[in-house]
Every structure is written in C-alpha cells, then in structure tokens.
Image (cartoon, rainbow, N blue to C red):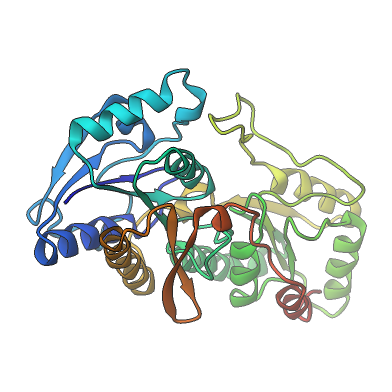
Length: 343
C-alpha cells in the first residue's frame, strides 16, 4: 500500500515520533511506501511531498517540531479544495492517509472521509482537550516545561516579595494550567472552565500575605475568562483559517488588576510557544510511537474515518465524529483538588 501522512495545526513535541512509527511499521512489516505531505493540508492541496523511508526517519524521535512542517491551512475554505485533494490522492496513488492533528486538522480529515477518501486520524494537541481519547501526546512535555518555569519563578518572586502571573496555553480547556499549577505549587490557578472574579483572586492573595507569605504564583490559561461575561484579551490581527482568534495577554490585564487592588508588585511571564518547542519527554515519545504504530495498523484493517484513541492504558479507535464533538474539559474534581492549595 502507498500511505500518506501529514501533520497539521500547531507543532507539538512527539510529532516526529509518530512519523517515525508510521514509516517503520509500514515499510518493515507491511511493505508499504510512505509519502509525507509538506506543511499539513497545504501540502495535500498543492501535492507537495517528500518520500519517507528508514533513512529519512533516522535520529528524529528526540527532535521537537515536525520533519514535515505544518500549517493551519483549511481546504474547506478553498472553492476547489475537495477537487485538489482528490487529485493529490490519485496522483500519489494513496491507499490511505494518516492525518495527525487536533480538532481542526481532524475536522478536514472527517470532511474528506465522508466523501469516500481513506483517512485515519491521530490525536495531537498540547492542550489535551480533544474528545475521543484520554490523552494526547505533547501534553506531558508542555506541562513539564510550565512546571519548570513555575519552579524557577518561586525563588525570584520570594526574593522580591512579588506576585508572579504565569500565562500558559489553553484556549478552551485548562489542562496545562491545572496540572502545572498543582505540580508547581501555584497559589491560584485560573482556567477557561471556571470564570474568575478578580476580587476573589485578590482576597486569596491577601490571605496568603496575612500569613506572612509575601510572594505568590498565579497560573492562568490564555483562554481564561472573567466572570460576568467579560471578554478575554486577544492579540491583534486576523483570525486563522479555522476562525480562531489569536489569544494572548490575559496575564497582563490580570496583573494590572491585582496590583491595583492589593498594592503588591506584580510581574508577568508569558510562556507562549516555549511550551511547544524542544525535546519531547520519554512519556510523549512512547505515546506518540504507540499512536503511529496503531494508525498504520488501522489503515491495513480498513478502519477509515476513525481516530486512534487511548482508553485507560489500551489503544482503540473511535469515529472521527466522536473526536470532534466537543472539547474535553477539566472536571470539578481536579479543580477542587487544586483549590485546596489556593491562598
């Protein structure tokens, strides 16, 4: 079989491990030839490819980013998008395409699958908010990076009696914020699932100050919202091809409000794309490898229109529609656990 693979959306630690696994299992066990589409769905639209063999995947498991590069291209917005994708499938003589991505990338995968093209999906997002699976690779690495940053900020915050507001990724779900906040000993964690009240946040910080703790760490997800229907800040510029605004800056607004309400010196650290970059953890390398091997097996079983999924400790597959139904949110139990340590 000739198998295609693409990586779409934001880059993520572990993508190269997926590519490596698909190529290794496909070529060594099934006798497949594997072709990579360059820059996600843009590569499929333009039929831009690179051949993938054992030599091309040598030494990539520990590398961040993606050998195939990526983009946020949305073929559904192109008037001739479907026809161009169909022609690329025919030109490359594909028996299957492995699409590695989040809800946007997999939404396109479902679209072309519904029209009869053989596609399997692999879940990818550091936000860990994709439905249909218990865990996405890249999340563990992002949490580790955020936790290390929080650990480092403790000492400088204590030295200067400052409040440090740490902004992490998390558009619609606060998994990175809640995990790194718990692991890093944050004093307040704010997530999109729980609209926050600035006055209540300040009371927690004052309570801590009254106990003789003159510094505090506040972790906030980029998509956190103020209570009462307030808007979350977004960066200037157009929305992306999937209609998403560029979030960023909630920490600056929050820091100004904290300093105004409490009088405590407050500083901001926005981790941004550092959470995506660099070497994936061992856990993410193994999880991504498992997903890649399972995806090529799915293709040979004819499980098209489905996504590889981790349920507990076991891999299975679910319909792409199940993966795209909703964002997977942080539950009350985990938030309640974190709140034990607030203030």
